[in-house]
Image 1 (cartoon, protein in one colour):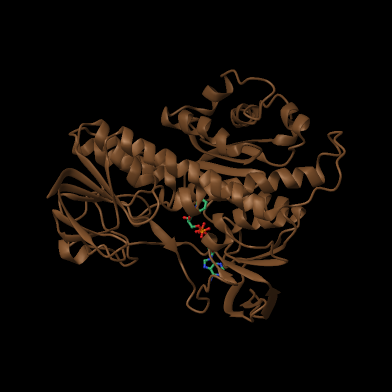
Image 2 (cartoon, helix red, strand yellow):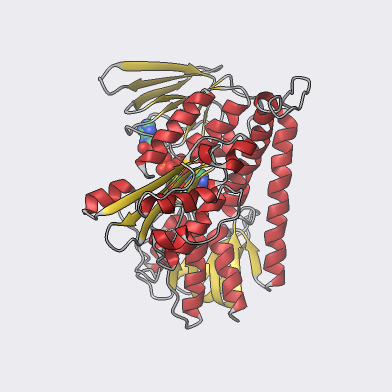
Length: 466
Ligand code: NAD
């Protein structure tokens, strides 16, 4: 029988990273995957959506911004089939990259559905129905999540779609209705808005990206409205119907009045749920919580001592980079190390344009906790770099402890915010004060100067360029 020190179930960013780290540490490692390596992130999530976001952004710039840059071109046209094809190639190349990494690290890959027989034996059922049994000392469950559905809006993959289908449409929607103003809704909504669709977002809460700092929500709403996106917040969807050639979405607004939207597609983007189907958790006695997530302790160990769980299938932010950190943590623990994750410093990013990114505490969280804080902020429009590239929207905002000046949160909306947030994470990991950042040289002209200026603003309103 195949016998391993560690078996990872699920080869998304959490699982494959866990497997690589286990192998690096000398553990004999297997990974089981029922679909392509790379999981949701590589195949139907982060990577393909970014490919389409990049393509649609080029198109948007060609239509709206080239002229001002002194580039005259004939009216550009979208070749949607080619756009989707390029996205597929990006995915394929990435998946091949993971296959290469598995080989390089001598990780044995099993293609099939992994299911517990008991706490130390896993059955792999292949597509042709044949099975193979694995004996394993330890298991890491990294099976991820799937798109949540609304009970009255079952996705039919035709007109009522999830992010997976939205990445493979055959045509550009005339009117895309998006249920949920969260990360997926706004990213995929942006793709189609830029390609010419009318996009209407219906959000249950009183603001979009409700988990992020409110100032980011406000600015993003303003900017996306300027781009043409329509928003209905505090609006509860009550009914969704596929009429054959289109969809009708009925909702109740905050005044209790019925709203009706007609579109050709409706994207349901109301969150994701942990994926444990077919895992046979009951055969090993592994417990889940009331939301179906696998229960773990701080070490990500389940109630069964040799079984761990990471990523979207456990509590916490459903983010690839959070899953990766957890994969490394479990691997290092299994090798006898004492790793640690600072969950407060897992950044959140939305890849709209401008991008949105935040780390640490939001202003709302600080208020609720009764922490005394100061705020520094700086608008992108005052940056030379932003003027040069015409990316004037957005700001950087720093929240620092009122008495110690320690940075408690950094929230950015603006060009390249997704990359800029890394400076915030480094600073906060080293428990920097706002003054520390304000005294560090930031290359000029860069977007990163917004962070330094916001830090200057936080430490006695000393911003130099506003
Ligand atoms: P989300 O939690 O980000 O947003 C869901 C939104 O839907 C929320 O704003 C919520 O209030 C709203 N909502 C819920 N029920 C509703 C209803 N009945 N009617 C109207 N609105 C409703 O979830 P998502 O956008 O589906 O993304 C799923 C997960 O994937 C998230 O955890 C997200 O962090 C992750 N993700 C991350 C990225 C990234 O890091 N850039 C990209 C895509 C997805």
